[in-house]
Length: 172
Image (cartoon, rainbow, N blue to C red; front, top):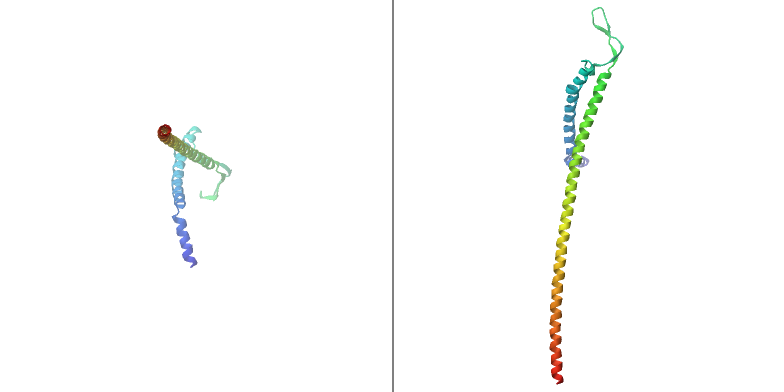
């Protein structure tokens, strides 16, 4: 019994839109990361390397201990080095990715703000139109009421005049 409930809950969880949106975001984010990494590694860093004397920045290092070769020319002891060039490239990679994401989010926010503003303007215009229509209806109802009251007053005036004539004719 617990298994069917577990799998039903799992199916419900997976079928929610948020999980699918998250999965799409991760896939697109991974592809975006590859594009920006290529931008840094293949375009920006060669230009930086050219600016600093034609060196590949990712290969910059500070050698703490040189490699020791044996008599055959094979490495007996490996080189010990701090590879700060690769670290610098990763920092630049991060900065480029962060800048691209910032620009993308900023554009999306501007679009949302504009859409929000347009929705508010449309809602305000619709409210103004509804208010104008309601005022027109109220004015028309007031005019109709005034016309009806005038007609009633005229009828009463006629009845009153008729009653006075009857009274005056009975007095004679």
